[in-house]
Amino acid sequence: MATARALSSPSRSTLFRAAFAVNTTLILAFVYLLFTQASVGAPRYAIYGVTWVAVGLWVLFDTEVAPASTATRRKAAAVGFGYFALLAVAGGLVTTPVPGGTGGLRVAFLPPGWGPALIYGGDLFNLVLMPARVVGYAALAYLVYDTVIEAAGAAVSGIVGLFSCVSCSWPIVASLVTSVFGSGTAIAATVTTLSYDLSTAVFLVTVVLLRWRPGFGR
Image 1 (cartoon, rainbow, N blue to C red):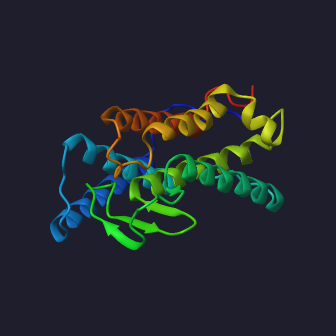
Image 2: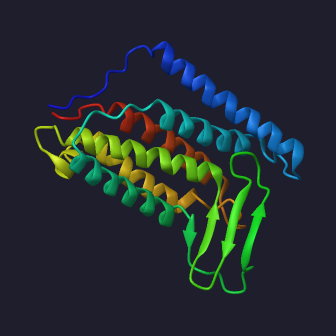
């Protein structure tokens, strides 16, 4: 039966990977500011962007997936990909065309973490690929992939096992709901300042719950 990861003291390897992710992100942010026309803007927005990238990189490099069969891994990968696709749409990475919007491909030099954002405007869809959202959503999708693999060995197997635990299913719902208010809207003039605080807080709580999964498998 799958069990929750204990909130024990982090190992030296985990601390090393976390420090590596933070240092790498800060160096990239400094180089980005040094060699582009980007500005920090409001300090907390830059901190939020760097936090998304650093935490996302740490998750991607430090999460060890449990052994599983090829069939289980394929099913888990499909769920993880679907989760990323849902976040991409709800979070504004993929949007419908904006009437009168700028077409073609361009780069927006937003504050660190949010930029450099690769933006594409087309007739069928728009893309707003901000590093913070892309890395953050990829990290959440990877954690969901890991969770589904563990759910395959739980008392209630497969997807039912994933959603049988409130602490596992809540992040999936919450991150989708809050992304509508804040995710992927850095270049929108109508964005509210609170949305960044809210979406960042939910992102961090989601990482914690999906990584350690309290109550999983009961």
